[in-house]
Length: 351
Ligand code: CA
Ligand code: CA
Image (cartoon, rainbow, N blue to C red; front, side):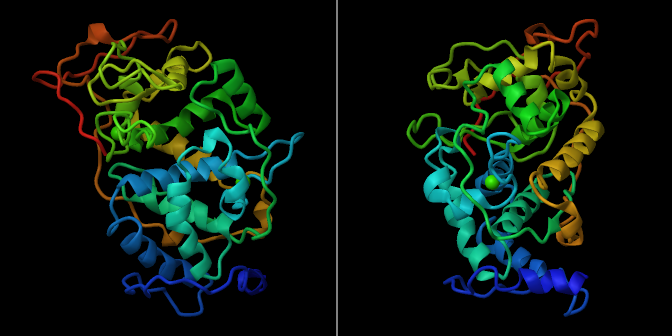
């Protein structure tokens, strides 16, 4: 069965491509193993897109792209979910304003997705899992392969936007099969994220938390700090005032942190990095197969690198802020007492 699946995936994409052959550093367990192609793709991806396996902007964008491909699914409106449509039909789907600036990572990944005999849908989920593994403290995500390379453009309007209100976002996520708690877990991805706002140079590459290269719980604390008017924040559609110079707060993140439907799950991650990672891993596994026949996929999770290093189980209050700056929003459960980093407020560099 495995071999027939592998054969059916061969030849899905042409072998054309102008990227240099990878230096093979991740030996496949044996040369006819059905995951071997992914070991080759891993070396290529790490060397040529992620700058030798780093948690850089391209890694953040690859993770973002997994969501933007997969959430293009609705039982009533259509869309094939995690089917690679955002890459196959980039000319259509990237016109959706919610897919703003995704073109950058599409352009980086598409040549590799074509170079190897794999589907776009597989490659997008693979790149997201590998990119995540480059960030310290991240979970090792599952990776299933074998998606068809046939897709149709997803209808516009299925991707939640940062200027949407909470009711709209929760309804859209429910339509795609995700609970409010699962949405909060997905947003752990914003711990390694930055604004990709090329139209607003002062906003570009500004992170969502003080530690954009660490998959920690800082995002869940810093979104609850009182937002203040800052020279570089709060002026672009879909943003709200952030607490720290150089940090961006998406309007939707600020609202979800404080909404009674999501605030307690949000707060629960602040001192429980283990639960945050476990729930993120579980919801990413679900996201990666939206619209797919899971029974026809095969498990190549072994190819995803083991993330290096650890982060603290508990987040901290950033330097220059105090517990009094926290807008605790979970009714009935006080915000946990956190350590505060010493010293004055530190400007946050761009990613
Ligand atoms: Ca899709
Ligand atoms: Ca972080």
